[in-house]
Amino acid sequence: MQQMTSASVSRSAKWNGSGANNEWTRADWFVALSGELGGACNIAKKLTRLEKSQRGNNLDESQLHAALANELSDTLQYLLLTAHACGVDLEKTTIENFNLKSKNLGFPERLGPDGLYFSGDNE
Ligand SMILES: [Mg+2]
Image 1 (cartoon, helix red, strand yellow):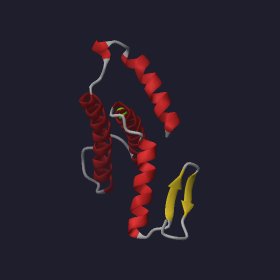
Image 2: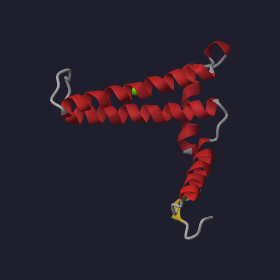
Image 3: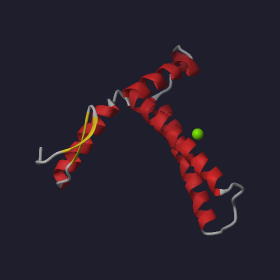
Image 4: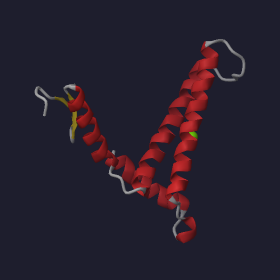
């Protein structure tokens, strides 16, 4: 996650340019994030229409799945950039939240720096 964030931040600085006129506000990042998630939702709607044989689709299932994958990927990129813009260490917070939820609900799954592991106790 840290590598993806670093790459996204580096590219974004080149993409948006530098200087006060090019700085995005926190709200700008959330709008961009919402736009990508909204795009994914729209494709999910189209998949539902396709599955229910309803009108309103010009793409087949495989095209819609590819489009959904692209929009979800864009959403992840903007989530990383939005978290960075807000000063949130998303990897650290995600690991802490995941492990706390697992502990509170009695699940053995835990996340660590090297990935998934299973806790035998309620640590
Ligand atoms: Mg997109």
